[in-house]
Image (cartoon, rainbow, N blue to C red; front, top):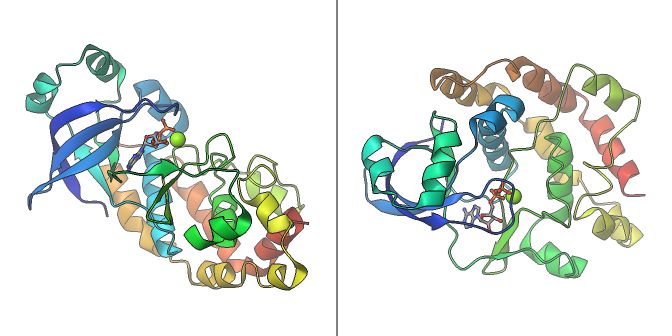
Length: 266
Ligand SMILES: Nc1ncnc2c1ncn2[C@@H]1O[C@H](COP(=O)(O)OP(=O)(O)O)[C@@H](O)[C@H]1O
Ligand SMILES: [Mg+2]
């Protein structure tokens, strides 16, 4: 489960063209202060997209697939903190915000956004491009395209952020997958799709080998501590079963899942 940290100081709104304009803050971890970036979702967004659940599960699964992410936590913004904000725009956002605990990640200082014009070999030095492509298809995340890569680069490593739009699933998803129908927003429009599609045959043959191993070993039961934490914090459990069923299906049909991925890069 995620640690719970208390917001202690507001450092500003990050205005870099994302959907939600997260805040840069300082949190008290109980063992010192650390800079964090916290997502201040509106009540409407959480209600309609279950954004916090998506962020938490995206983080938990990224860890299982050894994909690098800044450390995540749930963040409490108590009245003391709210009174100290002193920024009109932030105060307005807070009025509209969902009142429950927020999702935050440790600030990666001095990062830059992944540049989609980089060559595939440059990207491959920063992150396992085939595993990330596969992961985003598994969690059905449409938010890793060239317009919004949601990959932050620092010291030649790329870190995943922003899974609020992931887990776009319903009761038809398994049927769609079995029928080989797959939406372009997850597959063909992914930032690494063309890198993988244009690779040499010998390299291409090796793609998704390690992903398949991770998928076979994925610990769906291990997500229960996160599901329980979300329920304790008052977040809806309505989608939990659909998500569990989907992940288990992919795990049990890992060969077919990889076959779909291979088709998406031909
Ligand atoms: N942990 C972090 N460290 C540094 N910058 C971050 C971090 N998380 C988010 N950001 C910055 O905030 C921007 C928006 O964050 P993101 O989670 O993508 O929210 P949105 O839902 O608005 O797209 C990112 O593009 C990045 O510039
Ligand atoms: Mg984003």
